[in-house]
Length: 575
Image 1 (cartoon, rainbow, N blue to C red):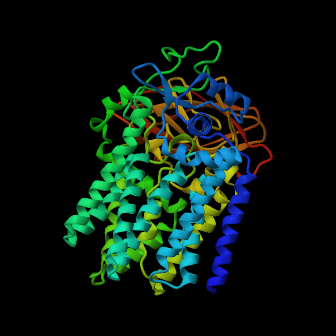
Image 2: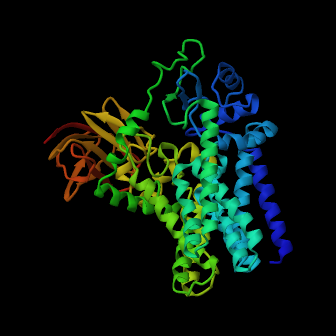
Image 3: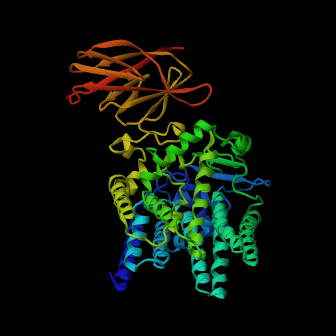
């Protein structure tokens, strides 16, 4: 693959991304209303203040359920502003001004392309152009990162800032190794500034400055250490100061209010936000460090973070394996150059970033490690590009070849179904988990309240909370109408020893097998026959000191019938 064909390949990728995003339908997901209105406000009014003209303009150009899910903040003067950091909206606003709402998606696609191109330039220092092109392209495309191109959200933006910061830093390291000191300082300075931008945009990204500082400290370049520290701090303070100058508040997360209707300045609403929404900042401060997850929850979260059904990065970002394998293969070498040390240090921000989210995982708040109810895969995995910088020279030995084949296999099985339908997957982020192979993956028991279990939604029957992991269940008058295949039924309850259920069969004789922990019971129900059943209740997970999670497995023999309906009713339980 010559350099000419690689250039053509990049041009085709860029053109394809721009065409797809420009003509793609635009939707509102998660906090998209806030980001869109913030972009619209900057584009039209050159500010991030929420005013009557903003909400009127939105209703004139509405899509989906905009502006539902709107986050606002109020300063001491009672003025309202959009409760999100402003830099994403600022940088995206020119694309919106020129191309309309699809311009925001085009902006995402341009950043996505630039990440691929930066990855290519980085890898090319130690690898052939062909290998660099293929690895960088597959690294970003074969991950759920691709899905977020179609979101009016900051996922691609945060990843782009981290990619750009580290790309500039490695250019500095290569320049130092090649004795180009004067030019190298430009790369180092720009890297510190970009990573300061990234730290402001998403606070956990602050750890990304550590490799730069440790590298300068290791080689005793005191002036460079001071330069990096100073520029990073200056950029962070400048952005916080800018937000303060615009709003009168240091951060957008002070006195937050959430709206799904009755928006301020609309008829029948209260612009003072005294009744319409509840600030959560007090709860957040109260929960803070004192509410760090216990050891059991942390250990579960580590496992789910890697292998969970909804959030496991192993399944949704399989190229991390290549980065890890290459890093460990590189570990045994003697490291003398700046670039070698840079690759070794890259694992530090990755580990710290992941543990920031796993440890600071609050109960009963909107904070979790994978992005909450609308996330596809782990949408907060902004540190993903750092895994690319774990790769130095790719040596095609047996271990590397096996890893690449494993990455491609996982991508084909798990990632391809997601990225081939990014819009549909984003609309219904639970749907893919109801099919094999996803439904065979471990369900995140620690995050049940944050998972997109929407079809049907979570319900409470007889003081018992039901979580449904399949969409073939209908809730009617405190009964569950199940139309096979039969799912695992999950219950959250205070400690119990037995639950009593009533099963009603609609048509065709069915051989029904019930399993609760180690207990197993088989019954035969004829058409229109019902039966009361007492089942021992064995908890599968301790949610907290007062609540436990229970699971009931239901299956039928034979498995394939013309009618699979059962009516399930939990009518009692004993402790």
